[in-house]
Length: 554
Image 1 (cartoon, rainbow, N blue to C red):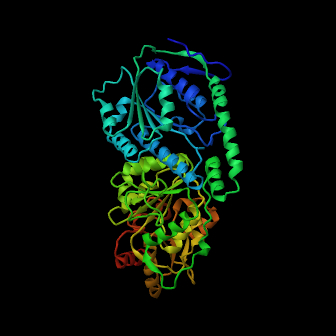
Image 2 (cartoon, rainbow, N blue to C red):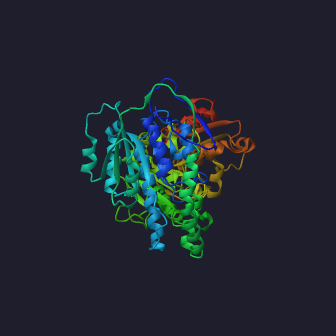
């Protein structure tokens, strides 16, 4: 075994115990970070950073060692199940973001070449066999993501018989095959000027294989080499920035590149509704969404269909139109979630729109984005056949779900998420609704509020969300003549309501009889009711009304 000679400060103990470790892979990473990759170890938001995503299947690489090489959360993903995500797919989002930013800056300053970084996805040979991997490399080819590099490692443990080089050749990739690691550096330098994506196949013989390593390896000399390489660029960047800050559009791009934050100047109070306003809630949502995205160029919309949500004044994103802000991936739901992760890691505010029936294919990305507090916002169009999927969202930690009942609550949702940098879900119905009496966009931020207040003492509480609020108001009004006074409570965001002061919660839903009007989303509400009898889940208002009358006698 050739001990890696690294000097200077931090010592990291590599303790792989009894695993079979290929030290060629360790050497590969060491040389990549020391000699090729452009990054600033002291600045996470370095603007021209080469972005690296590493497969969790590369167990030869100790996570702490990678963190020392490269202070970047993208350096290694830790999944509970490595099959939950395809790292090739996630890397596409990084590459799309790179291309968008380069072209956005060139629109304002055509002669600049200040951004020239790559996305390098490092994976094992057999990972390319999955259908998701084929979708990913096919997408990289069709979009001509020329700064995308797939570095594929094959060693003697890989028993894959298929010649995957042919697959990449068929898709017109730039193909490089190398034995060992000696030539990788020069190949990677050439990728900076490539017009098409690149696949580098690295064949390792395991001639440095060991079964146990217990030694201290000093790594921080990498930072000395990197600092020397990157300091030249930092000076160039500072000059560029100082010379262009007077241009407000370029200044906006520079600020985003350095801070990775999206600030949206959207005010719901500026929206005035016609007295006869009436339309499908999904149409209302699309209009308010477009008002929001018009305020900031760093908002990207991904969808498998234009029927749910789209940025009206933007063309679809493509290799011919890299500045399009709608990325349509028809019949490729798996790519929606993965690509959104890559875009969000670069600082973009990302919206995903599709049908609620597709949620099963997006649960993994929902869990990943919510656990990492990523700025990703899902819009799901519900129907009667998919409504039961709503309950599963209540079990995803850190995820806030909205279900607005009309245009006012839609406005309220966007007021909340405009500068909310974490993951949300917005469930929208396809029913036609007027502006409901009693709704108010300002109260959505409380998660729940009364839309029908009682003039006399209240007999019971009727809780609803989404299109069910209209039905709840109808039922409550019809019961007044029978002497039954209901307070109708809209709960557009149950988890937001749970964050409120207990005094407000108890005032809104006191200790009295409580009914839930919902045909599918009941998991978060059950604590309010005595038993399941008080769940009104029939689509017929008269049936639900009769059930309330019966239970009020108990």
